[in-house]
Length: 311
Length: 284
Image (cartoon, rainbow over all chains, first blue to last red; front, side):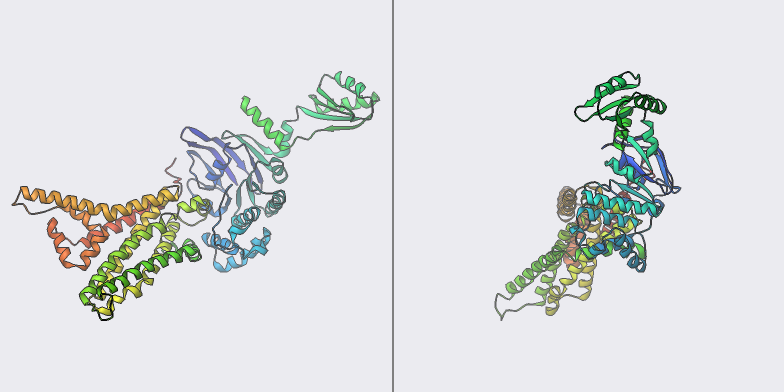
């Protein structure tokens, strides 16, 4: 559905995008992860036909953003990271205006607007002035605006930024609903665990380049070489530590005094890890918990971008 | 064409414009200036008494002065209405959303222009009752009246187009306002200044070469594109002949004015339309 080919954007000498290549399939929720200045907003602006690339091209549903921008605008719904609203315009008028901008006949708009307000849970704010709505409500209204022409692709730049926890949850629920509707969604966020919940795939961008792309589990698996393991014992902490020290794959053992909790890094394979646990039980150690720390997306991101820096 | 003129941007702009107090206060300011002037004029010419006379020639003079005053007000108000039309959207961060809709750049620009022009026309219409006082006393033909309004329209569309072009090119409204008012000062005053300089040089040249007939097209051009000069020459054939004699050209100055302002409008709108969105094909 979205294909980015060797996309480069220069601002003077600064390369905001450096030969970005990426593919997003139909109906996928794709999370775009990157630090500030990594090139996320630049990439989104080019996809939204707001910015011309220095070189390269991007295709949305087979339409080139460079050669057919007007066609692309018909099939995308774009939500910028920062946006304003018109003063003196009511919520339904706001949606009606954008509906008219997409050429939707007035009769259809009258049916669509209540449905969209219902979807984003703003039905009770239909006759309120837009500038009086809270930030979270404005974000949801902007999302409804993105949907007014029933686009195949949604490009959402930091849709949850600046929202309180409740508003974030509401936004996440709406995006899940849109995913169920079969929309292809490109979403960027700094709140990485949230992306993990919502996205089928993620792409990590750093210094204008895509460092890695794949489904969340696959990327997490890339980092399983160094596993952080926590062991809890009822007693005999010292004996357990001594046992672990004898294993060649164990390092960085730390003991939480008084809790019977020992953490260490394990560099062996899954099979070797299983053998370690079996030997510990056979040796009669009083282990009642043996847990591998799950790496969240934040760790994945930090590890990947750290790797990119050292390359 | 219908889609370009009657577009959602125009309808939204009109709706928003009439929901703000600013528009009504602007209208009030405009009418107040006209009322003060007309009543002052009447009081002065009737010598502050109920027995004073007001002659048709004086009525024509009032019409002339009101016409110049109204042209001045149009030139003063038009930049205020148009110079922020695109830059304000940019500052309020609403422009990017508008640009990702399927509205063409022409629709957006024309919508913005027409909403401002519509408001200025409303101002002119609102001033009509005051203007029509001159008809009570005679001395002015309806044709002169219609001609005057036609030139107001030409001028305000041109100024509006310049304002929108500058607003599209600049990022900040304040810069756009200053640049647009600067252009107004150029058209309203600097052109007149250039005309007088050109005229002085011409007279100096003729004094040194007594057998030479005056011929100064550039000096005539500066006078022809000045809105004040246009109004005065339209109303007074004597001033018009004095102007043509001074430069040795008999070509009607209103034609030059019309061509110049139509070209300025077309050029400004073309630039605004081309520069509104990123040029995808050539900016590579």
